[in-house]
Length: 396
Image (cartoon, rainbow, N blue to C red):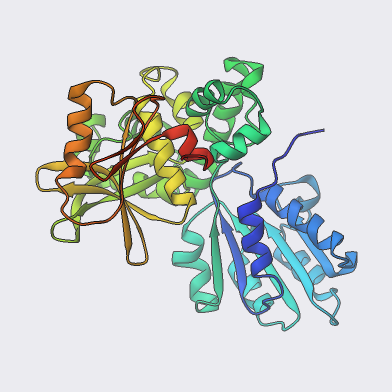
């Protein structure tokens, strides 16, 4: 039996919106991050709550059973047969594979007793496709690969060893790191190729695997570095227009996230530059084929970025005069500043990491996250926390 961790936070979001007919619940996330398992867990919850089987319509269009319903006519026919009494829960997994899916979902949203949930592996589902048909009557749940807390639940063991493993192999639930690097890389390569071909190249209507792979490798090599389209074009030798188009495609397929640069003094976004982060670090390991992956400082910063996203922050890279702050994390009117470092035990490193935060003159919380186990605490108003404790929510 395949082990699965219960994705509590995402399930809560689904349960909180349960029975809100007329509002489509849209779950987005990169392929294999756990959307299908989440849907299955939610269906199990519905059954345990007493929902009748004929009031649950669940289809994963990437399974053998789901292939028969890829025809929009057949799918519409099955949907018309659903009960007209009581709330019917409709869960359509990887719906973007169905031709004309937007109109089908739009028509379902109009049926008063249908509670509709869909998943997809492309962020453009909302920005350019579905939203034009349902006029904002949806709520999005942005799903990420496993948090370290979830990873540790799925793979119990020494937490320090597991954390290094997590930074290397990433958080896709079906990755099996204990079976060795060859097995893990084989699985990750399959996922990466599927994303490139099905979710990027097919949508861009091109088969240029070599160019897009070159761009992806550049981005994976430079996670945590300030960059822009011009730099990527120069680094890959490709046309800036091609680079911009392909980067946008990979962002839409949720392979990468872009952290905009934020001017802390002027409180404004800077239109140029920013940082790219991988949605899953295992994809990075596979794409780089081990080259430059022994340094854990970049994956550490990437992991903190993803954790801040999970916790509901809008995350930007900060700029304060001539200093850089790794992350400016914003929620509502509240702001927090984060620096990430493998260690701050040396005076030079401590001066650099603390200096950026000390230069900021407001009173918002300031935190340094490190792998260190010593010299933790609060110094001059700046918290120094062990990053694993912070990831697990067990920091003092």
